[in-house]
Length: 178
Length: 178
Image (tube, rainbow over the protein chains, first blue to last red):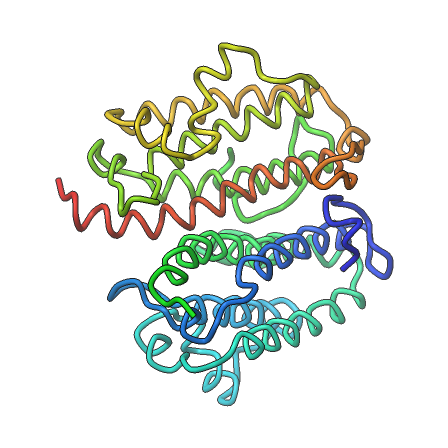
């Protein structure tokens, strides 16, 4: 990610032109996610605001889980296998199971998972051309969705949860000071 | 907004090709914002979770205020005038002033403001070609930003706050039932 190009939606070397624009947006979204969680401790990552609230750790792992889901959907056209379900179902669902299982990890753990998942996405993007972005399948409510939309949704979901993390971070820092 | 094309990032009739893709993303973001606030009462729109929290009404008007800011920046190249500052500074800043001033309005008020602001954006988009998207100016931290990035940021900020609204909605409905 070139920090001098952070505010440019543009073609990127190594990617087809439209894919480069998509990656520009994903890069900026990720940059802001990382800025939002910088310096958080394990206790702050585990902070649960109320009974229905996800921790910041939950939300970070959810971002990687969603990305895996769309890798399977758009690159490989398959369902998750047993091993993937074991590791990723809870953060994907963001329910009680996640609240129980995703705890006691340092920030580095989440950053590593996000980074490893993103590496695969970018490798696969490099191999594709722009026409792939416009391939359509029946999707939500059986309406057509193209691959561009599906990856837009990946960063759109990340931004949605980053907004929640910004809100939670203020409270986590207040109630779980170091 | 064509609901059968909601999950397609694609060219749109009446817009230059790249602007059409941008509008596709803005359309989906707006669709989800509207779905998130559907049916909320005045009391729920005014619900304030804690001393540092914005109401859902604040956040909705903030979206329109940000859109105005980027209209001025990218279409007209001017600062807001006195009248615009009077109406829009508080929701733009999302601070204490917003919490005091933005209250006692029904959902229709916010939806109308959002819709009127968006109309202007789309009219201006229709008049422009794709090369305009890539015009750059020095921006945050004096780094270059193009118009595509600035409008990406408009919907990116909307999605960020929609994430917060989703979180607040659950609590507003619980604590301010009709």
